[in-house]
Amino acid sequence: MAGTYKATISIGKQRLPEVAWSLPGELFGEHPHRAPNLALLEQISLRSGGRLNPSAQELRQFIKQLSAKQDLAQIFVIAALMLLFIEIIGREILALRRRRASF
Image (tube, rainbow, N blue to C red; front, side, top):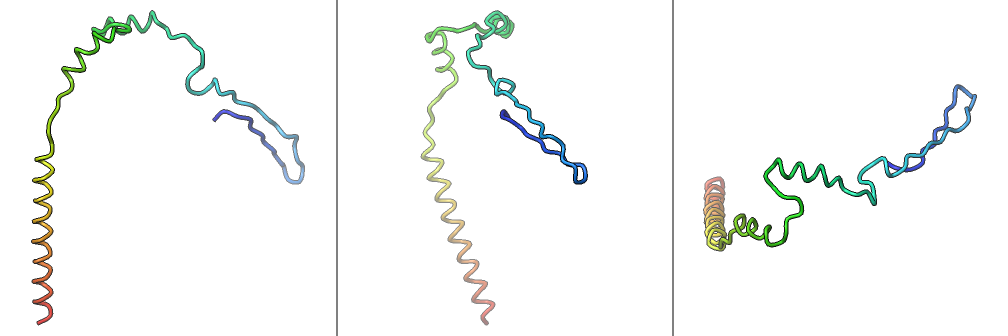
């Protein structure tokens, strides 16, 4: 983590002078105000069959192809009914076992 670090070392009862060092934030993560390497990005995009900074119109064709609407309400209703029936059957089985155990 970035920040100032201090170390105090003792050898027996002898205390050594405090040592301090600082780690600047630029050592970690992104560097602010650094321009992207556009030549490298363009080379990578061309090799992978893409384009560097495509227009919004070019991106829309991919969004339409990748997304599809599907109504999931029926699936959830069926799942809810199945869970309800499983719960009812489970309660009945437990009640039957309790009745048998009480005899």
